[in-house]
Image 1 (cartoon, rainbow, N blue to C red):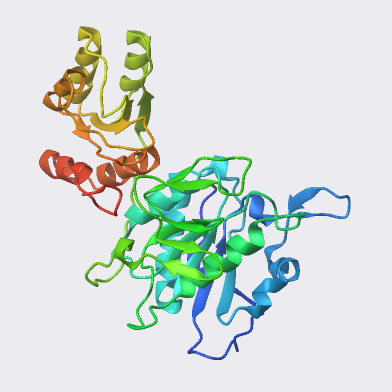
Image 2: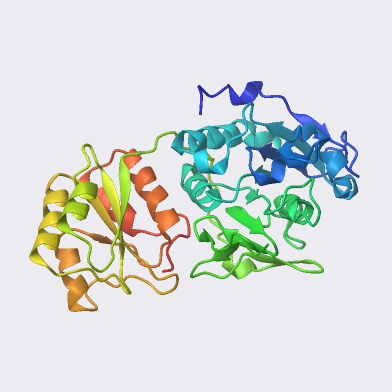
Amino acid sequence: MPTPPNPAALPLVPLPTLADPTDATAPHVLLVYTGGTVGMAVNAAGELAPMELSRLDGQMPELARLPLRVSLLSLPEPIDSSNVDPADWLFLAQLIGTHYAGFDGFVVLHGTDTMAYSAAALSYLLEHLGKPVVFTGAQVPVGARRSDAPRNLVTALEIAAARHPRAGTVRVPEVGVFFNDVLIRGTRAKKVESQQFAAFKSENYPPLARAGIGLYFSDKSIRRLPTAPLRVHQRLETSVAVLHLFPGITAAVVEAVLGVPGLRGCVLATYGSGNAPTAAWFTESLRQARARGVWLLNVSQCVEGRVVQGKYETSAALASLGVVGGDDITTEAAVTKLMFVLGLGLGEAHTRQLLGENLRGEITP
């Protein structure tokens, strides 16, 4: 991403909806367009091309029936989600912080390929979040037949504006991913499908809400923390890696990953409940990495279950080497958690504590 603009300087475009734009009592949601399939439309030549997002109301007449105020903010240069990097996450966090007081909720239109990483990263960067930040997108562009964009976007906007019917409080004060019919916690989302509309799954945790004829919220699953002022973090440590174990992995491969100059952290994608080879060369590679100050976070390759270091002999040595068990965290949440925690610049004991703790609902206690 080029030098980011000043978030406060980006124009806000009001979209026509059912709500009176001057009615201060109507919920006000900021819609942030970053790029992705959802922002494509069919041009005069019949080709899919980036769409001017101010035309969104023309492509989606459903927006006009929403009883809430919606303002659109588009990034100057749309980003293909495969090109998203930590600098983009820091900018999005800063943007939300800039507009936090002026809106009741936020919806981020984002490409699907790295949406789970972005949602997890924003979960960490936005500490004490008290308003919804809902990521959504589409498998089929808004300008194409059978697009899933209208349903995803309309429902995401409704979630971002939702209040508890009895308490009158914000319904989902979390970063989430809404896709197809489920709202998933940002630190639990994983893209599991590239051809079907149900593109995301909530790993090891129930969805926060489901969309059917109505919206059905799982209040017992939603995090409600003591209120505190929003804190927007502005540093991530990007010198991290992922080492995916497989039968036959060689010392040269392991050393090539763990020996990257300046490496600060590595997610170990291990077998089952956190198991890894017991070969002397492998454990010695881990020991040397830890001696150089590389943090190692143990995450299971299984999509369900959790890491339990010491359950089997093949994982018992990892804890003694200083490897931190990741419990049931996803790889996406583990990578971004390493970036976040290491970016805090804390001491050894505090860093180890935070890596093992449940910070944003990424680990099931």
